[in-house]
Image 1 (tube, rainbow, N blue to C red):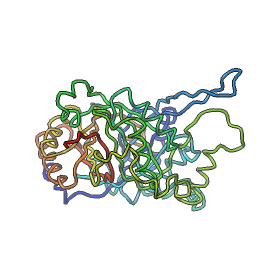
Image 2: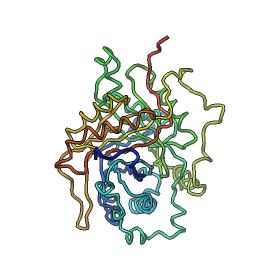
Image 3: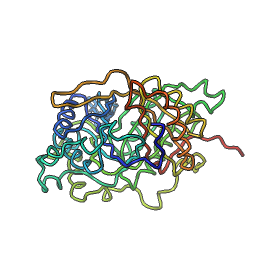
Image 4: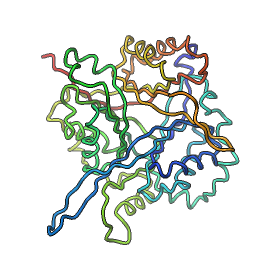
Length: 398
């Protein structure tokens, strides 16, 4: 892979599917029906607000409720993306608006596509062509085309705070995963002693028009504008279906508000009708402090076997990469006879990269892998996505 320059990268589609653990087998069945050869899965927890009535009082109390979930990452060719997306939605029942989140994004992939099972034969044409969806059913799926992803890296124990802010803003059901940080923490000097390397990764989706303002409100509400408090960024998504079942409690009507919103989303095909902010409100909300705002970055996702990550990250940091957060995932394969896990742990690392330094950083990352291909020919894998906006605390120099 060290001989693969950035100019030889190709566009692929990554489908991310977040579902409660009890529905994980349905995801695997849908992938098998599509002929998808495999992917990666990560243990996570989805967070919602539980509303409870208080005895003898008209008021109610709220608390966060967590559900064990699985987050799947599936890589397919762009031509197969829509059919795989629809098959997953229908087979898992995600169109019910409260079972999970699924979305796709375009990425550049450096390396041989066959190593990830995303080549021309990765998805069986017969399976996806006969997916049981007539055009009318397909049109009724509440898939929207104007969504954005928001990712937050915060110290362990702070993920619930970010999740509550996102839920109270009415964004979407967030997912929280564990990881460890490198880079930003190391650049804080002596302050890093008080900042643990263990991180929580919080991901959620938002209507595209509101994403930047919602991210700014997360910065303010979760106090990410403090030293070592965390990092937040937006990433561009293509299309998806979002879990908006934010509040748990009794239902008093024939249809829940979540079902109504999903139905209108399907009717319009986007979320513009429920945009919450006007143009006048699109100014920064973090107490007028825009010092930590950054634009036009890239997020480099690195998939490696356990033990490969350190040297590759060192090369990226020396070339000018920003912060990096690593978490554990499991590679799996799907075959006609079932599913089996690949031996050994896999690490997934997100690295924030300034766009002008992208080519040099990826070149050095690939060079750092040249001696590590034996025994794990599919690793490491490098993907590049777009980050239109990010925020991290920066100490003022004047």
